[in-house]
Length: 166
Image (cartoon, rainbow, N blue to C red):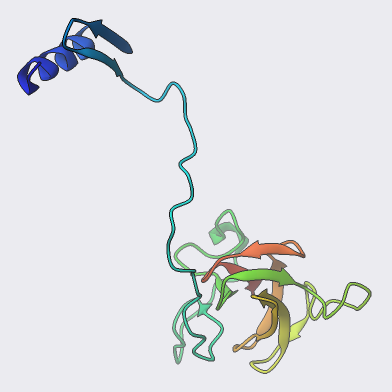
């Protein structure tokens, strides 16, 4: 059997919406399946271990760049679904590393910050455990915590928003 015959079989299967085709002859045995009827898990592929990018010392803070002026609207009618004015970016404190998010230094301690708390650039807002190392994460910006976006002891990704600020 040559490649042109196999292509022809594939075309016929597609044309007639067949999911499986099998054929046996003296010199050939063939079985062709289309689609993902049975999804299996591939064995682990040996690769180098993953390491988070080096921490640059800045907790990935996103939001609008600082500006000298600009009028802010106090009109609720202009607010979008999240309560922020349309076109206004939400300021967040993002995870600088991959790891496990903790709101407090220990299970029986108070949280570093809670909704409504004021933070400064030096305020420790959480701990992220990465490779058995507890990394204190600082706010790096000033503001008021509007919402905590991650549950305690949950895994977080690099750049994932942790806190929303006002």
